[in-house]
Amino acid sequence: MVPGDLRYTKDHEWIRVEGDEALVGITEYAADQLGDIVFVELPDVGRALDAHATFGVVESVKAVSDLYAPIGGEVVATNDALSGRPELVNDDPYGEGWMLRVRLADAAQAEGLLDAAAYEQLIAEG
Amino acid sequence: MTQSPLPVATPTPLLDRHEALGARVIEFAGWQMPVSYAGIIEEHRAVRQAAGLFDLSHMGELVVEGPEAGAGLAAALVSDPPSLAVGRAQYSMICATDGGILDDLIVYRVAPERFMVVANAGNARVVSDTLAERLAGKAAVLDDRSLATGLVAIQGPRSVAILQPLTDVDLGSIRYYGIADGTVAGIPASIARTGYTGEDGFELFVDVHRTGDAWDAVLEAGRPAGLVPVGLGARDTLRLEAGMPLYGNELDRSTNPYEAGLGRVVKLDKQGDFAGRAALEKVAREGPGRRLAGLVVRGRGIARHGYPVLDADGRTGEVTSGTMSPTLGDAIAMAYVAPDQVEPGTMLDVEIREARVPAEVVSLPFYRRPA
Image 1 (cartoon, chains in turn red, purple):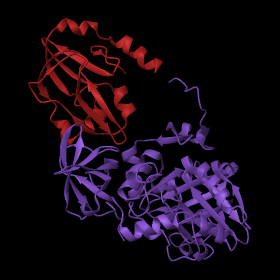
Image 2 (tube, helix red, strand yellow):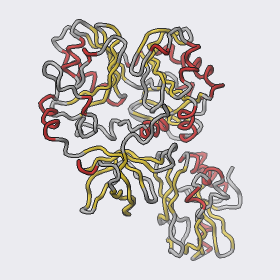
Image 3 (cartoon, helix red, strand yellow):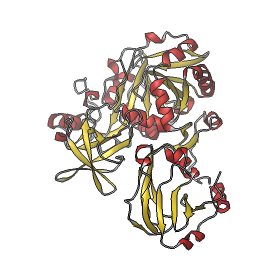
Image 4 (cartoon, one colour):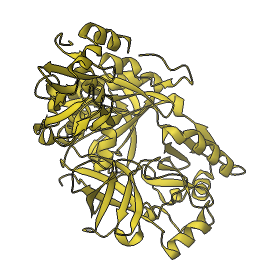
């Protein structure tokens, strides 16, 4: 199920806006499509991200996939747990499998992203 | 998901089984095949610890029969099939006259004048055409049985315990790289003790119309012992841990057997000429220009197919296969490097997304099953 309180991209990232910051991860659909995730590479704290820019990679046993920033901002934290336990992205993509905390350059950007209903439709269409 | 319009891939005869088991199905070498069921890592571990069941019906089965079948194959391949006893098999290759590998094969001698050549799905046509050419004028008939033959493999330490109650063949009498005819769950089968996982196990060649029955019987009998269906994803990680080459990665038309560390397969001492002999004798004499090495990544990241391998002077080679090893927990890879860089302990770098990541040369295989 797609949580109703998040915003989504067509690249299958999610964002949870909390004031002027936001958490970023990949969706359960994306994690399922990738299969067993065995490596996550995240940016250094302090890096400025442009919206749509690649911010890291996620690797399953078979494939390497780029991660795209849903919105612009500065990385204020990354999920260190993923370096030892990348499988958290499969197990709990919207919780313990989070990837970044970003200080938003412009919180209004999030309004332009997909809501849960639109994202559900996107994955239903494949 | 949208359907790709062309070309249409051949469905494995077990496609309905795989779909019922919840497999993710992909197109591979012109076939629709299962890539995973429960997940690659879980399937991989099941094969190492219990047993896995594989659908390999996409592989090519070419039967060569006649008084000159053995001599014809000896001239067509780099190995020496006439040296096989009936019921024995050998790993082999078919090379171009320049020594480049057209495919790697297993050749089984199933009767005094009958051999079965098992080719990779993606090369089955090339192998069939090339064999037909090279057997021309010989008293031997080539019969491409690929579409008439289903192939199911059971691999893992519990393979004997699971399969023995289903068959009239004493599995203990089939040695590694042996083959015997019998039945499995009442279905006529050729039972070979071969595989591509680094584990003990068997490959069951059956009539394509009975493949589903054989699959069902083995899976049902093995479930209580931990047998699970395993897709091509785990097949790849299993063979990589076992240091076994994959055509298209470690082997291809521009690679010769000596570069791949498989010079032992080339029987230069056999009688008569064979396709590629002159070129391969030259490589054997002068030594290969590059060699296949095992790498373990010592920094952060996973070396993947096509990534550059670097030494202090710059680029020295390329990764052919790489993954996160489910058994070892390390990122492992095979790569072509300079001939003097294959000594275990040699430190090289792999270029991963523009960063140099250290990697140590190790001896192959990465994994060897407990004795």
